[in-house]
Image (cartoon, rainbow, N blue to C red; front, side):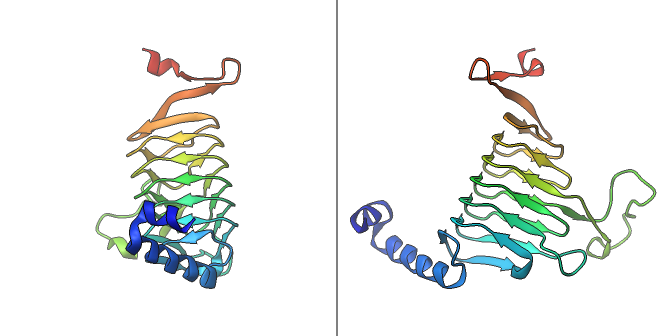
Length: 205
């Protein structure tokens, strides 16, 4: 085991990894491995399951709108890679066995409302002083999110789905689908009859 780790990470890398593992067990006992630096803000409003693995430079922060509720829940055996940023005000729920690549941003909120309603924020208002606008984000089991993806407020990503790299997800994605682009749109769905990922009608054109 030690030889394998040294071969993969080198002596210095293995030493850093060992230190992270010890630190993980002290401060995040349910996690498999937390690579540091790691920032969890509002820890008492965040619930994570067994087997959580993170890369370096991740930030998970919860600022409950009611000041007391659990805001972010992360299921079991979730892997989050380097520089992922997750922020929650109302509800961000991540299911089991979810794989999240590096530099992903997931948020249920924004500074201000821009929906085209009478409650819209005025552009002359200082951005950080605009009331937070929030809608829950749900990422179901077995989802794979690619590199540099943004998942925005009000989105549900159905189980078994895949989000392509560099996508911006502004609308919900059904289960067993592949979505990509800015804004993200469906490009494939899994066909249980053929056991293949089939292109959507739009992609066939």
